[in-house]
Image 1 (tube, one colour):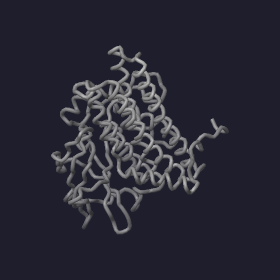
Image 2 (tube, rainbow, N blue to C red):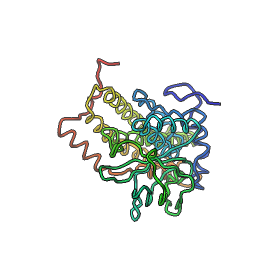
Image 3 (cartoon, rainbow, N blue to C red):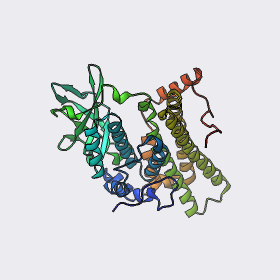
Image 4 (cartoon, one colour):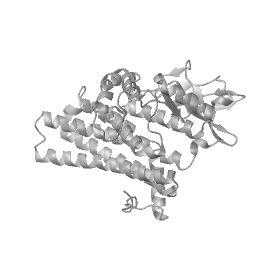
Length: 364
């Protein structure tokens, strides 16, 4: 039976609490967070995760809620959202119908772009050769969108994963263990026309390829919120939250978390404007680049405040802060942060972006 659908601000039992129930166990064994995805399926979120352009604000809040419950689940679910969005944007009617039906049945998808350095994925004579690493969630996915270079651009291929060789020895991370970002070997897989998704370089379509980074930023905001939750709960339980120095730490953490949600809301407004043709795309990309750097800095500040406030005991398992610190510090390491910051600087220099421009008092 499907549970009540997630809506931001809706009065409901906290989704993040249900998602975090098995997080410590999955951190220990590195297994796929199946119970958490069972909760998401029961809420109808695997089948229909708020993919309309007008739902982007709700999607970002949903991703934050999931990250607040469990960051590895958030990472895998964000990949599922990305895969469904690519299929709906670039797929044929038959592809959209097929994968929508699979999602309705509870199947989870991924998007894997990073090649194994010594065996990059290639397509030759109708068959794949090589491997992808950082293949997050492979132990619980049925299909993944993978990319290969072609003569006229990068090509997306939707590949069924059952039976493919998986090397789990490589994934020995500090945190995010349950995201299961292993190495998958696709050598020998036959590629049919029905598996090709979109035109060459559709994966890199502007502005959505760069703007889509706001989805993992949303999961970061949720992880930051979870660190705040845990630190505040600890200080209340130990009756230290009334200490004036701890009050300063709690205040700084709370303001930082609120700032993270503010970046999500600004990006959502600009996303809708671009999708509706009311605004050019360049400011949206700059806003997402700004959000990446700002949320990273805010999250690192929250981690520092929480570690100092709770003390050494919070860095010793099984205290929940110990796992959250490892997971968030690991997940914050996203590709090319310097390039994103440089892009924002160039947008400012060119007069494309400036702080505060998102607010327009003439609109609700």
